[in-house]
Amino acid sequence: MAKKKQEEKDPRNRVVATNRKARHDYLIEDTYEAGLVLSGTEVKSLREGRASLVDGYAFIDDGAEAWLDAVHIPEYLEGTWNNHAPRRKRKLLLHKEQIVKISHKTKEGGYTLIPLSIYFSEGRAKVELAVAKGKREYDKRQALREKQDRREAERAMSTRSRLGE
View 1 (cartoon, one colour):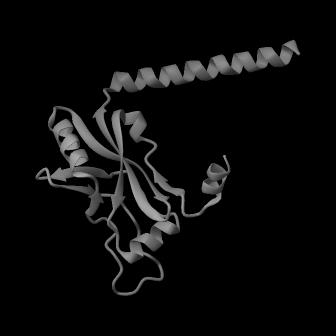
View 2: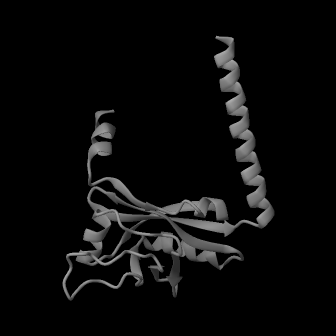
View 3: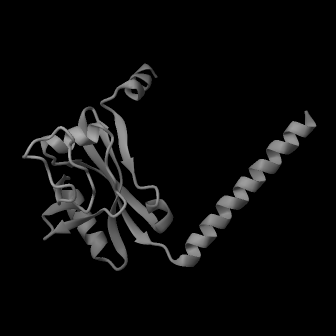
């Protein structure tokens, strides 16, 4: 219990960026935690809480290496001439078995590898990846309708409990 509270307050364990739209656009099958290979200015920029996963995706290169592409980590403001490129390919650190499993899954029809969040875990930058399948338009509408119905039911129950007391 004490360890959880300590981890919540520890600045070395915090979420930098999340891809909130991913859960709306995709059906999440599996999730994986991967390390990121970053340069020094990228880490400093992430520690400032500046990143965007909106257009980001990951892919497996020849079944051997995993890469994260199109994730925007802006340049570090106090960086010098050796600042990083904001949208470059970044290598992901995964176990070989995980890479093989992910590559087999993504080679099946309709599956893709998307980043859900970037965060720090014990001072190291990590990314949460998801093997996901794209939703159709009617699936999105149905999910929104269910969410709205759930909200209305909760609102009705709360007003009823307030009136009853």
